[in-house]
Image (cartoon, rainbow, N blue to C red; front, side, top):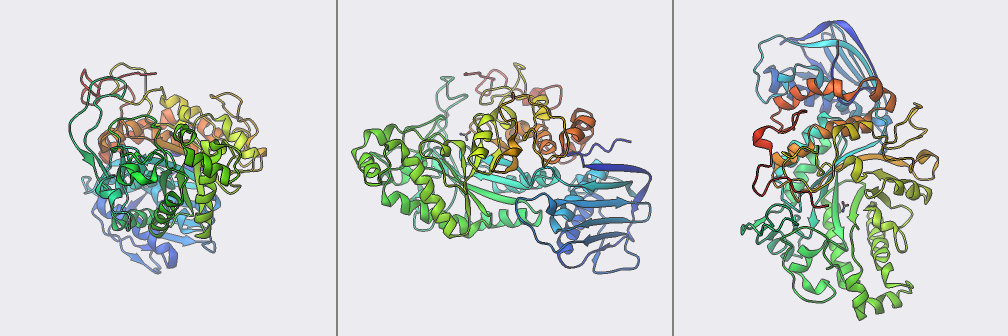
Length: 553
Ligand code: ACM
């Protein structure tokens, strides 16, 4: 019998028979196992209508969650998320060294239950049954992420909670929020009120693709999260052992900042929040005021987010304004940088120092390696070329593998002409399901590896830095609403989750193509606007208007 689990567990032994989730069942858990037990309670209650009580101990307990370790967790680590799940006709037993592993097992149970139990209210008659099975599981990578861009198009808080729940179901453990960009600033910062008054909305948005020449929609767009909103999101994720990693993109991608505070820029001229997409020349001036601004923002960010890592962006920061600015050049001379181009490296080091003083490490997009490089403790999100991973690792940096050709879910999912508007590119499920994020990684005790992107990253594991894991990106220039984000994300994100959790041999022995049809019924029960394997439904297609497919490069 195929259980169609995604990701594929390390070891699965299906047994004959079923366990009946009867109304008399109780869940036994104590201490730090209690939180995961209540998650299971909530899942059963919603989908089956049965309120299975959580009790500390019971002779008759039919479902038991037990911690076998000291609960210590380094993040990212794979061992904290190990679990054993044993389902017999009489009992369900979950054991893990850390509550994170118990939560992963609960997600596996959510997948083992009939798909309709994922609904918000019961539609199935009783009894609800779980197939007997013995699972011994552990992820390949300790960082399994998905990034959502809430700057290009603001995404409602309810969708952040839903995405966290969907990430949890797929055993992901990082949700990275890209909170700021040229087109909008989404975070309230006391002392800098204009960031939200001015920077959180734009007057209108380009219609169709930025290069399609269709004009503008004439409609304001915006929104921002309060500190309480984001604390709620962080706590919701924490209950699922998911870390929310905040990104403040600096020193480029700051048109929304400069619209609010033009004095932080190089020219002092006011620029409105951007209404189209691309790379803009406007960047922060290398001034004390700009550094103070960044420190104030990071102080707020570290107060809200408990992530040990803070993403400082650093991508696509043109040097044009600095090279034209006598003040920027004077600053580079005063700092003895040897070149104005090195100002970004100086910014990165300053951000890293400040965040380190607060016990946090910086992550940056791979551009932070250029023109002077990044501090040794900076983690690199490798996005442009997979080969950069080898270079970053050789330089001693820890790395998050996020190459656009393998995990940018804002790329077109097929070459069909009826696909709705995406940014560009071609990233079908097959490319994702074949990609090995760390070829020849000794941590993966399997031997055969697939290298659809070439040999560039051969020998990653032999380097000084560590491959933390892998992360998918959902940039939202052309995914304005949650439904459009869901179309781009699913089912490709399920394949990314499989890539991040399962070893290459299990992925090859259990092709995701065989497991996806069963898994899609789970996404269907959850109301996810996924892309059918054969292509978009008519109402998901681009049609002939501004959402028509447009391939600009
Ligand atoms: C990026 O895609 N600009 C990181």
